[in-house]
Image (tube, rainbow, N blue to C red; front, side, top):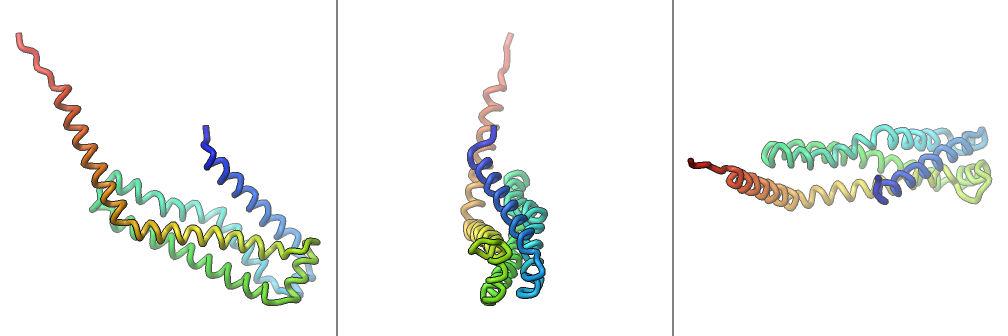
Amino acid sequence: MANFGQVFSSLVTAIVVVFAIVALAMTRTPEVSAACGDAMWNMTLSALVLHALVMPFVLLCIVLPLFYVADAGVDASKAAYFGSLFAAFTVVACLFGTEVYYTSETLANARCVRALKDAAKVNDPLLTTATIIFAVYDGILIVLILVLLACTDCIWRALEDRKEEQEEYEEGTQSILDVTIDR
């Protein structure tokens, strides 16, 4: 049975994806293209596709090194740990910067904002709102990666302690099972 966190994050992700698809569908009009150009619409579509296809791999770059460290040992995995976190940070930071740039450019153009609001028939430029949601998600990932990098020593110490405890347990278990029978 899935825990509450998994269900909640899946539900939020589904809502954000549906919201972005609706925003893209509602704002693909000639009026929006004339007022804004296609850059913001293309950026939002790209962000949606990248978050659907690339972000699972980015998350794996964040999580898998910890399993590799636990399995292969601390010394063998420092390069994999830092390399994967650096790759994840680079991808997320570039995406975050692009989202912020296009959103700020679009929101600075009053004519474009009016066209987006009119196209969506609400008093909100849904396209920029969808991109802002993606940018917040990316910002959280950037903070998470920076925390993992800042806590590297703590993670390494904890994994070394865990490995030592496991070795002590295995030694203790072996001595219990070594029974000699004398006749």
